[in-house]
Every structure is written in C-alpha cells, then in structure tokens.
Length: 112
Image (cartoon, rainbow, N blue to C red):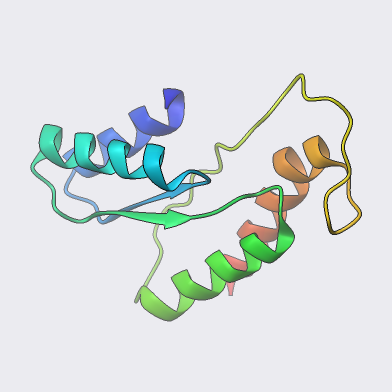
C-alpha cells in the first residue's frame, strides 16, 4: 500500500522485474495482481518478508541471492509507528527492529 505500492507500480511500468516483499501473503498477492493488470508486466513477484524478524530478513535475502541473477535497485520502505512497546522473539524492540535493524541487515546482506 502507499508509497511502496506506487514505487512498485512505476518500476513494473518500466518493465522491471519487480519483487514485492510483504508481510501479508493475502495483501501482497492482491497488490501483485493489481500491478500486473495495470502494467501488463507479468514479472511482478511476491516474496514474504517481515523486517521485524531478523530470521525472516536472512531467509528473504538468501532466497533473493539464490534466485535472482542480479539486483539493480532496492527500495526499503518498511515502517511502523505508534505500536505498543514489544520485544521480538529475538530479544529486540519491535519498532526499532522493523524500521531500522531489519532494513539495515537486508541491505547489507544483499550487497554481497
């Protein structure tokens, strides 16, 4: 939704292979279908990612590095605000992990 979906739509319009990294399979698949229909680009894919989980970030990065011959652009657009204080299963504060640590780790893992 929002800025991320607009960016993905623009990339797909430019005929880019576009991977939507989403927490929700249902919402992500709906966005994929909408973007494919609007752009005519069949190379819009869904991959699950929760930047609030470093294990999820590592699994996502590993899959991208394994499956994709190259990565030209990375748009980090995950962000949450106003959540009650919570600790992740990895012992980290949820908002900080989702907004900063997860995207930072993802970027560094994808740099290779």
